[in-house]
Amino acid sequence: MTLTTFEVAMLMATIAIVVFTAQAVGNLFARFRQPAVIGEILAGLVCGPTVLGLLAPEVKQALFPQSGAVAAILAGLGQLGLLLLMFVTGSEIRVHSKPGDRRTIGLVSTSGLVLPFVFGLAIVMAIDHQNLTGPAGSRLTTALVFAIAVAVTSIPVISRIMLDLGLLRESFARIVLSVAAIEDVVLYIVLAVVLSLANSPSTEFGLWVLTGIEDTAWSVGYHVTVTILLLSAFLIWGTALFRWLLHGPFGMVSRRGSAAYRLVLLLVAVLICTLLGINAIFGALLTGLCARRADQQALARSAEGAADGARADARQRIDEGDRSWEAIRQFSTAFFIPIYFFTVGLNLDLARNLDLIFFAWFFLVCCVLKAISVFVGALLAGQPMGRSVDLSVALNARGGPGIVLATVTLSAGVVNESFFTSMVLLSVLTSLMAGFWLERRLSALRDRERVSETADASSAHLAR
Image (cartoon, rainbow, N blue to C red; front, top):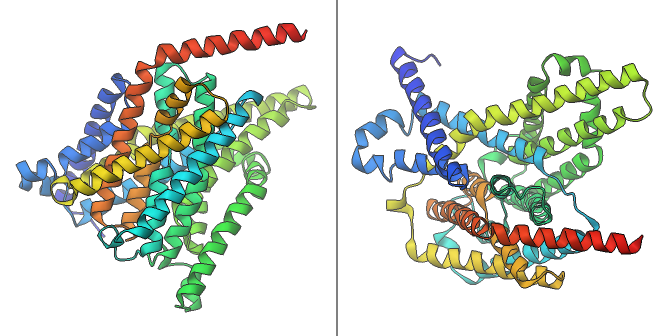
């Protein structure tokens, strides 16, 4: 397909407007210590049918058409932004904790994940799901999506809030991010199963289609089995494989184009998932997780038992790898990821697709179930009342994962536009609530950390 001069001009204008407005509004939110992603979505909302479409529909149609070359390219850039978001998110997943925090992490993860998920399933099983389900969905897939929406927590949003508040190195942040990492990995596995259960576009291409088998039970069995096997393969052999690819015989290729080489590995993993009939975001998340762990393991090994020259060479390669991850993160967050979140807002039509009654009880149910389950887990772990409340509010932020859940299930036909709109608004509002709450609790959180550090130092002194 060849673009006309006019189409090229409109494409350049559209992309420039998208990136500029997303960055401008996102930076404005960041200045007030709120998640930049919320501003990027809001920028798309203003330029979409909700605002610009009502005030100046001709301008909206000219800049953001619903079909044609400009719409297709913008959607492609947004899809690449989603894959890069998952890739970067996977690279930043850490589950590090002090021995004293492990009980809290274990109990909060269990209660904060299992209880909301089970209650979410029960709610959809007890109501009429037709008003939530898309053309490719069913009661089961809708129930699973609802349960994920109740239980999910955002790593990128909550980590950015902690960073802005100067809490990222504190015990409170370690607990929150460790719990969020555990929950998100589990829930992305469930999402992969949901997409396999649905008769979605992600299953219309791949090895399963070549078999010609159309029986639903066999299809479900295949996709669930392949998802579990792929996860197991990544967890068992993924890190070693990526360490060999990045720091083994292909190390010279990696050094000459470190960031590009990692992006190529991402695209290959996405292609493999597509061929297997698994949604690409799952492969992107696992690739980021394993590739970054491979770099960290290579760094640890380079510091052990090597000659000075070999150690210096290995350390130089590791430094290049770290710079490549930072380059990928910076360019992704500057261009592709804002386009993705902008398109999320662009697809929101609050005037037509927002069911206020459903959203009100959906929002209340999600917040109450998640907060109570986390609060109970924290109390059982021996956390004081105030800290338990802080954990329940922080882990209520759904942010990026909630938005990914909404957009992926909408594009797969699992949910309808009304449910999609409610899930996006839930993610936006809960992220804002977490930011406001933690900023106002900042001094109390820091005082708690100082008391804890003093107690640890006293215990260590008495032990000596």
